[in-house]
Length: 200
Image 1 (cartoon, rainbow, N blue to C red):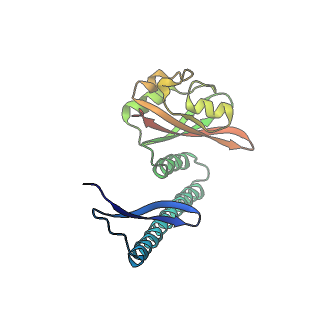
Image 2: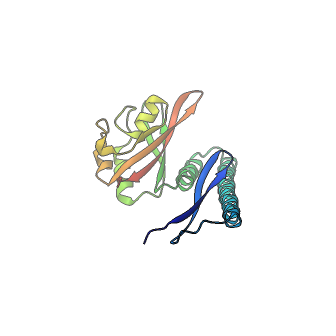
Image 3: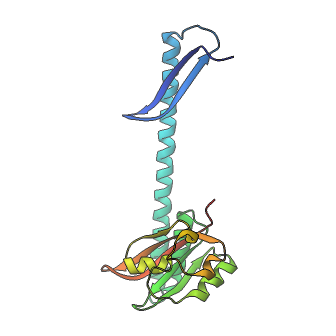
């Protein structure tokens, strides 16, 4: 049996349509103005709930970022001559806040890129990455690409990227990678990287 009478009300926020609430009947009996007004009221309430959820999420994310930044600044002030704790904290916070599986920090000495900190890497992946570094800037890895171009490097699937050439990493099952250069006065001094698993 199909529905014969329907009423639909859009969920609006300003000029944007966020969704729709619909009601239907299996008999031909139009909805009254009162029933339509009730549906509109539910639509307005749904928009409020959605907006509140968005604001709460944004507030929580902003707080998480502020907390991470404060932690890194605390570590820097606590050990100004030892950069390793700061690198470790950056790797951990970047991974957690990006909802990634693992993350790493790499230092560029002007010639070679060195793997200096990690978080969440499985043992086989960590071993493969450590075995592959240090490396030169170039197009053959996400990190090397970010250092070379001084721009964000994103490889959705290393298996489909003809320039990617770190087979030890690729064989671990990591296919999707993102690397952001660390710049000082416009010059690359390192990079942070977030690896992912093979795309489904």
